[in-house]
Length: 458
Image 1 (cartoon, rainbow, N blue to C red):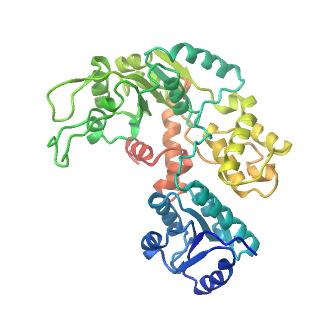
Image 2: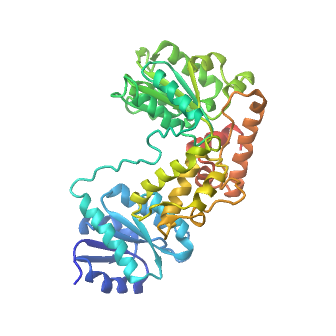
Image 3: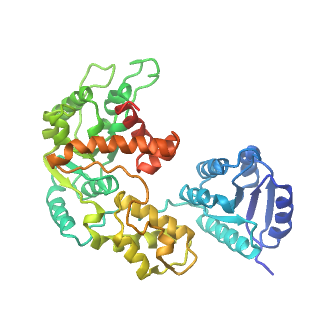
């Protein structure tokens, strides 16, 4: 006799599937409810309080994109994060289901389903949901959240510098290609500093629109402009006593750079609409994947600001220049994602290791992390093989990534912006203008892509 406990909610517009599951699932679960549409989903969650929701990915017979399922999976995790979501998908939508797991879904089931597999996944989801109650601690994400120094000489040198720099209040400029871990290094510096008990406030400087730049960084007072209904504390003031991390600083327009320089020099800010300067005590860390020296020569970045933020310069090497760290990093990601996605994996076989070490990794650590995450989700064996990692055997990049050169080699400087513009255009063409898809392809956020589109007049 099955151990009947837990509540399951089925959301599927196919009446035959709902009837079949209403017969099968009560053998294993204490209560089973089924609804044909997500239109009543929130109300049903509030009244039924399920442990697990089995969610179909398509509810419109004319538009079978799977996006509705992805949307509702995200909404469920926002509204009731303690509920586990299992996606119900057709074979053709497996890639969408993988995306759903990245957004918080527990697992997915492919139609037509095998009863044993269905029950195995749903009971595992139920057990996880019930184990988490009554409290629901946030999972500590190990993948990419702490600094992996590795054994390469370049990273050893950076670590030695960081150990000297971090305890001071010196301003640091971090450069490196997209995906090399500039934000992770910034957090490491903050964690090793005397300010670690205070906040570290991160800002994607290139994604802030020009009209909101001063308000976002310096704050505003009530009535400063039409929608300023209350006072707003800016990022500088939020970081008071701690660290302010300005990412993508190379994308700030020159006329706004002057306002940023003034705040950095005076260590004070004047909120928009205000008249009194407010002193701020911050440690500043900046990052970019662009060649700032070249931008200075081109008149696109202020020289005085460049020297102000460049007290110490740390240049993170691309992953292809630290090959000895590729497999150890992959194994860390594998262990973390195996735990997250409930996969029984023991490691990488020799074919997978060779494939990983031979790849170019244009997206660097972020690309490697995404590769391993996808492989873990789709894996069926105990070890990941070359078939699971699905890399181009020629070693070319698996997907388009932003690769502007961060170093200060003058012979590369003119190519950096051109390369970036070409890659942005190509991404927009390949995704038929889909902003979300293009941003994912490039390995950047949607706001950053919007800023780059505006920058290049695209």
